Image 1: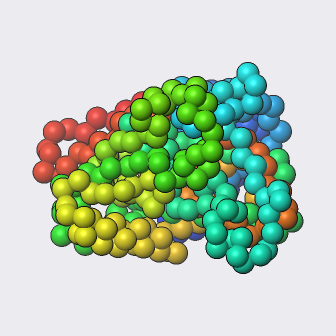
Image 2: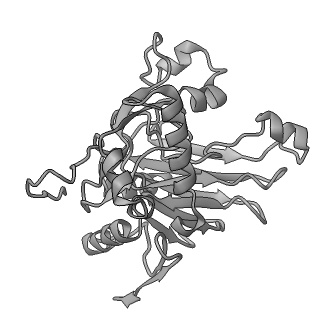
Length: 306
Ligand SMILES: [Fe+2]
Protein backbone atom coordinates (compact mmCIF):
# COMPACT_ATOMS: atom_id res chain seq x y z
CA UNK A 1 0.00 0.00 0.00
CA UNK A 2 1.31 3.49 -0.86
CA UNK A 3 -0.21 6.72 0.47
CA UNK A 4 1.36 10.14 -0.11
CA UNK A 5 4.84 8.72 -0.51
CA UNK A 6 4.49 6.34 2.44
CA UNK A 7 4.70 2.68 1.59
CA UNK A 8 3.39 -0.07 3.89
CA UNK A 9 4.40 -3.72 3.46
CA UNK A 10 2.81 -6.25 5.78
CA UNK A 11 5.36 -8.66 7.24
CA UNK A 12 3.03 -11.49 8.30
CA UNK A 13 -0.64 -12.38 8.41
CA UNK A 14 -1.37 -11.01 11.89
CA UNK A 15 1.39 -8.64 12.98
CA UNK A 16 4.06 -6.27 11.68
CA UNK A 17 4.59 -3.91 8.77
CA UNK A 18 7.62 -2.31 7.18
CA UNK A 19 7.12 1.40 6.51
CA UNK A 20 9.13 3.46 4.05
CA UNK A 21 8.86 7.11 3.08
CA UNK A 22 8.91 8.51 6.62
CA UNK A 23 11.89 10.30 8.16
CA UNK A 24 11.41 9.80 11.90
CA UNK A 25 13.68 12.74 12.71
CA UNK A 26 11.43 15.21 10.86
CA UNK A 27 7.76 14.28 11.23
CA UNK A 28 4.99 16.84 10.84
CA UNK A 29 1.66 16.45 12.63
CA UNK A 30 0.09 14.63 9.69
CA UNK A 31 3.00 12.16 9.59
CA UNK A 32 2.58 11.49 13.29
CA UNK A 33 -1.13 10.85 12.80
CA UNK A 34 -0.34 8.42 9.96
CA UNK A 35 2.36 6.68 11.99
CA UNK A 36 0.05 6.35 14.98
CA UNK A 37 -2.74 4.83 12.86
CA UNK A 38 -0.28 2.33 11.33
CA UNK A 39 1.02 1.52 14.81
CA UNK A 40 -2.50 0.64 15.99
CA UNK A 41 -3.23 -1.40 12.84
CA UNK A 42 -0.01 -3.42 12.66
CA UNK A 43 1.24 -3.50 16.31
CA UNK A 44 4.89 -3.58 15.19
CA UNK A 45 6.40 -1.09 12.70
CA UNK A 46 9.85 -1.44 11.10
CA UNK A 47 11.56 1.62 9.54
CA UNK A 48 14.97 1.32 7.88
CA UNK A 49 17.90 3.72 7.41
CA UNK A 50 16.85 6.25 10.01
CA UNK A 51 19.19 8.88 11.43
CA UNK A 52 18.04 9.95 14.88
CA UNK A 53 20.05 11.88 17.43
CA UNK A 54 19.36 10.94 21.04
CA UNK A 55 17.25 14.11 21.43
CA UNK A 56 15.30 13.31 18.24
CA UNK A 57 14.69 9.77 19.48
CA UNK A 58 13.30 11.14 22.74
CA UNK A 59 11.22 13.74 20.85
CA UNK A 60 9.75 10.98 18.67
CA UNK A 61 8.72 9.04 21.77
CA UNK A 62 7.07 12.14 23.24
CA UNK A 63 4.82 12.40 20.16
CA UNK A 64 3.19 9.21 21.50
CA UNK A 65 3.02 10.25 25.18
CA UNK A 66 5.07 10.84 28.31
CA UNK A 67 8.19 8.73 28.57
CA UNK A 68 8.76 5.84 30.92
CA UNK A 69 11.88 5.62 33.08
CA UNK A 70 12.98 2.02 33.48
CA UNK A 71 12.71 0.89 37.12
CA UNK A 72 16.05 -0.93 37.08
CA UNK A 73 18.25 0.07 34.14
CA UNK A 74 20.30 3.25 34.23
CA UNK A 75 20.28 5.57 31.22
CA UNK A 76 23.33 7.43 29.91
CA UNK A 77 24.35 10.56 31.84
CA UNK A 78 21.65 13.22 31.42
CA UNK A 79 19.27 10.88 29.57
CA UNK A 80 17.25 8.87 32.09
CA UNK A 81 14.61 8.21 29.37
CA UNK A 82 17.11 6.18 27.34
CA UNK A 83 17.29 2.43 27.97
CA UNK A 84 20.63 1.24 26.58
CA UNK A 85 20.72 -2.12 24.79
CA UNK A 86 24.12 -3.71 24.48
CA UNK A 87 24.91 -7.40 24.25
CA UNK A 88 27.28 -9.88 22.77
CA UNK A 89 30.65 -8.70 24.06
CA UNK A 90 32.73 -11.37 25.72
CA UNK A 91 30.19 -14.02 24.74
CA UNK A 92 31.14 -17.36 23.29
CA UNK A 93 29.57 -20.35 21.60
CA UNK A 94 30.49 -22.60 24.52
CA UNK A 95 27.32 -24.65 25.16
CA UNK A 96 28.09 -24.82 28.90
CA UNK A 97 28.20 -21.02 29.14
CA UNK A 98 24.95 -20.75 27.19
CA UNK A 99 23.21 -23.36 29.38
CA UNK A 100 24.39 -21.64 32.58
CA UNK A 101 22.34 -18.57 31.69
CA UNK A 102 25.36 -16.33 32.23
CA UNK A 103 25.15 -15.30 28.60
CA UNK A 104 21.52 -14.24 28.87
CA UNK A 105 20.69 -11.05 27.02
CA UNK A 106 18.13 -8.41 27.88
CA UNK A 107 14.78 -9.60 26.55
CA UNK A 108 16.04 -13.09 25.73
CA UNK A 109 12.77 -14.63 26.88
CA UNK A 110 9.19 -13.90 25.80
CA UNK A 111 7.90 -10.81 27.57
CA UNK A 112 6.07 -7.55 27.20
CA UNK A 113 8.20 -4.72 28.50
CA UNK A 114 8.05 -4.04 32.24
CA UNK A 115 4.66 -5.72 32.66
CA UNK A 116 5.53 -5.83 36.38
CA UNK A 117 4.77 -2.09 36.56
CA UNK A 118 1.31 -1.04 37.72
CA UNK A 119 1.13 0.95 34.48
CA UNK A 120 3.23 -0.98 31.96
CA UNK A 121 4.57 0.95 28.97
CA UNK A 122 2.29 1.74 26.04
CA UNK A 123 5.07 0.89 23.64
CA UNK A 124 8.74 1.11 22.85
CA UNK A 125 10.91 2.58 20.11
CA UNK A 126 14.14 0.66 19.66
CA UNK A 127 16.90 2.08 17.48
CA UNK A 128 19.84 -0.24 16.84
CA UNK A 129 23.11 1.28 15.67
CA UNK A 130 25.30 -1.78 15.52
CA UNK A 131 24.06 -5.28 14.71
CA UNK A 132 25.70 -8.66 14.11
CA UNK A 133 26.43 -9.71 10.52
CA UNK A 134 23.98 -12.55 11.04
CA UNK A 135 21.51 -13.14 13.87
CA UNK A 136 20.15 -10.94 16.64
CA UNK A 137 16.60 -10.92 15.22
CA UNK A 138 13.61 -10.12 17.41
CA UNK A 139 10.43 -12.22 17.49
CA UNK A 140 7.14 -10.44 18.14
CA UNK A 141 3.82 -12.19 18.83
CA UNK A 142 0.34 -10.72 18.61
CA UNK A 143 -1.77 -10.96 21.77
CA UNK A 144 -4.82 -10.11 19.64
CA UNK A 145 -4.26 -13.11 17.35
CA UNK A 146 -3.65 -15.36 20.37
CA UNK A 147 -6.85 -14.22 22.07
CA UNK A 148 -8.95 -14.43 18.90
CA UNK A 149 -7.84 -18.03 18.28
CA UNK A 150 -9.10 -19.29 21.67
CA UNK A 151 -12.49 -20.99 21.98
CA UNK A 152 -15.35 -18.83 23.28
CA UNK A 153 -15.47 -21.02 26.42
CA UNK A 154 -11.78 -20.40 27.18
CA UNK A 155 -12.13 -16.68 26.41
CA UNK A 156 -15.01 -16.45 28.88
CA UNK A 157 -13.06 -18.35 31.57
CA UNK A 158 -10.00 -16.13 31.18
CA UNK A 159 -12.11 -12.99 31.55
CA UNK A 160 -12.53 -13.77 35.24
CA UNK A 161 -8.81 -14.06 35.96
CA UNK A 162 -6.00 -11.76 37.05
CA UNK A 163 -2.28 -12.52 37.32
CA UNK A 164 0.67 -11.37 39.37
CA UNK A 165 3.53 -9.93 37.32
CA UNK A 166 6.86 -9.61 39.14
CA UNK A 167 10.17 -8.12 38.07
CA UNK A 168 12.21 -10.23 40.45
CA UNK A 169 13.27 -13.19 38.30
CA UNK A 170 14.19 -11.05 35.31
CA UNK A 171 15.79 -8.14 37.12
CA UNK A 172 17.70 -10.23 39.64
CA UNK A 173 19.42 -11.84 36.65
CA UNK A 174 20.44 -8.53 35.07
CA UNK A 175 20.66 -6.04 37.94
CA UNK A 176 20.89 -8.28 41.00
CA UNK A 177 24.56 -7.55 41.44
CA UNK A 178 23.87 -3.85 41.88
CA UNK A 179 23.80 -2.69 45.49
CA UNK A 180 20.36 -1.87 46.96
CA UNK A 181 21.21 1.83 47.14
CA UNK A 182 21.79 1.82 43.37
CA UNK A 183 18.44 0.16 42.77
CA UNK A 184 16.71 2.75 44.96
CA UNK A 185 17.99 5.46 42.60
CA UNK A 186 15.47 4.12 40.10
CA UNK A 187 12.56 4.60 42.50
CA UNK A 188 12.46 1.03 43.77
CA UNK A 189 12.01 0.93 47.57
CA UNK A 190 14.79 -0.95 49.31
CA UNK A 191 12.34 -3.09 51.32
CA UNK A 192 10.70 -4.28 48.07
CA UNK A 193 13.49 -4.16 45.56
CA UNK A 194 11.60 -5.52 42.56
CA UNK A 195 8.37 -4.11 41.09
CA UNK A 196 5.20 -6.22 41.17
CA UNK A 197 1.63 -5.69 39.92
CA UNK A 198 -1.63 -7.57 39.30
CA UNK A 199 -3.19 -7.30 35.83
CA UNK A 200 -6.15 -8.90 34.02
CA UNK A 201 -5.17 -12.01 32.01
CA UNK A 202 -7.12 -10.57 29.08
CA UNK A 203 -6.88 -6.81 28.59
CA UNK A 204 -8.85 -4.43 26.44
CA UNK A 205 -6.69 -2.20 24.29
CA UNK A 206 -7.50 1.37 25.35
CA UNK A 207 -7.33 2.74 21.80
CA UNK A 208 -8.62 -0.05 19.54
CA UNK A 209 -11.05 -1.72 21.95
CA UNK A 210 -9.70 -5.15 20.91
CA UNK A 211 -8.94 -7.83 23.48
CA UNK A 212 -5.48 -9.27 23.91
CA UNK A 213 -3.90 -11.98 26.04
CA UNK A 214 -1.66 -10.30 28.59
CA UNK A 215 0.56 -12.89 30.31
CA UNK A 216 4.22 -13.57 29.54
CA UNK A 217 7.01 -15.89 30.64
CA UNK A 218 9.29 -13.06 31.70
CA UNK A 219 7.13 -11.43 34.33
CA UNK A 220 3.90 -13.36 35.01
CA UNK A 221 4.18 -15.52 38.12
CA UNK A 222 0.75 -16.73 39.22
CA UNK A 223 -2.94 -16.51 38.45
CA UNK A 224 -4.54 -15.07 41.55
CA UNK A 225 -7.88 -16.92 41.43
CA UNK A 226 -6.44 -20.44 40.87
CA UNK A 227 -4.51 -22.98 42.89
CA UNK A 228 -0.76 -23.11 42.24
CA UNK A 229 -0.81 -26.25 40.07
CA UNK A 230 -3.83 -24.98 38.11
CA UNK A 231 -2.14 -21.65 37.64
CA UNK A 232 1.14 -23.12 36.40
CA UNK A 233 -0.62 -25.48 33.97
CA UNK A 234 -2.85 -22.76 32.54
CA UNK A 235 0.00 -20.26 32.22
CA UNK A 236 2.16 -22.81 30.41
CA UNK A 237 -0.71 -23.48 28.00
CA UNK A 238 -1.22 -19.75 27.41
CA UNK A 239 2.51 -19.11 26.86
CA UNK A 240 2.74 -21.92 24.31
CA UNK A 241 -0.44 -20.80 22.61
CA UNK A 242 0.86 -17.22 22.30
CA UNK A 243 4.13 -18.53 20.90
CA UNK A 244 2.35 -20.18 17.94
CA UNK A 245 4.41 -19.24 14.85
CA UNK A 246 1.29 -18.09 12.97
CA UNK A 247 0.84 -15.27 15.51
CA UNK A 248 4.42 -14.03 15.09
CA UNK A 249 6.67 -11.89 12.98
CA UNK A 250 10.47 -12.14 12.99
CA UNK A 251 12.24 -8.82 12.53
CA UNK A 252 15.71 -8.79 11.02
CA UNK A 253 17.73 -5.75 11.99
CA UNK A 254 20.22 -3.71 9.98
CA UNK A 255 22.21 -0.75 11.32
CA UNK A 256 19.90 2.26 11.83
CA UNK A 257 16.69 0.25 11.83
CA UNK A 258 13.99 1.58 14.15
CA UNK A 259 11.22 -0.67 15.42
CA UNK A 260 8.14 0.62 17.24
CA UNK A 261 5.96 -1.88 19.07
CA UNK A 262 2.69 -1.70 20.92
CA UNK A 263 3.43 -3.25 24.28
CA UNK A 264 -0.27 -3.52 25.18
CA UNK A 265 -1.09 -6.22 22.64
CA UNK A 266 2.25 -7.87 21.79
CA UNK A 267 5.12 -9.67 23.44
CA UNK A 268 8.62 -10.19 22.09
CA UNK A 269 11.83 -12.15 22.44
CA UNK A 270 15.37 -11.15 21.47
CA UNK A 271 17.24 -14.02 19.81
CA UNK A 272 20.79 -14.52 21.09
CA UNK A 273 22.62 -16.35 18.31
CA UNK A 274 25.53 -14.00 17.65
CA UNK A 275 28.16 -14.95 20.20
CA UNK A 276 31.27 -12.82 19.90
CA UNK A 277 29.51 -10.05 17.97
CA UNK A 278 27.94 -6.87 19.29
CA UNK A 279 24.31 -5.78 19.11
CA UNK A 280 23.95 -2.23 20.40
CA UNK A 281 21.41 0.55 20.44
CA UNK A 282 18.99 2.55 22.54
CA UNK A 283 15.33 2.30 23.44
CA UNK A 284 12.82 4.99 24.33
CA UNK A 285 9.74 3.73 26.14
CA UNK A 286 6.34 5.43 26.32
CA UNK A 287 4.27 5.41 29.49
CA UNK A 288 1.06 3.42 29.43
CA UNK A 289 -2.20 3.12 31.35
CA UNK A 290 -3.22 0.62 33.98
CA UNK A 291 -4.42 -2.49 32.06
CA UNK A 292 -8.15 -3.10 32.26
CA UNK A 293 -10.71 -5.50 30.80
CA UNK A 294 -14.09 -4.49 29.51
CA UNK A 295 -15.93 -7.79 30.03
CA UNK A 296 -18.10 -9.23 27.28
CA UNK A 297 -21.21 -8.89 29.49
CA UNK A 298 -20.50 -5.18 30.03
CA UNK A 299 -22.85 -3.43 27.63
CA UNK A 300 -21.82 0.12 28.50
CA UNK A 301 -20.76 2.04 25.37
CA UNK A 302 -17.15 1.68 24.40
CA UNK A 303 -15.16 4.91 24.75
CA UNK A 304 -12.04 5.13 22.66
CA UNK A 305 -9.13 6.81 24.38
CA UNK A 306 -6.91 9.39 22.72
FE1 LIG B 1 11.81 -6.08 25.71
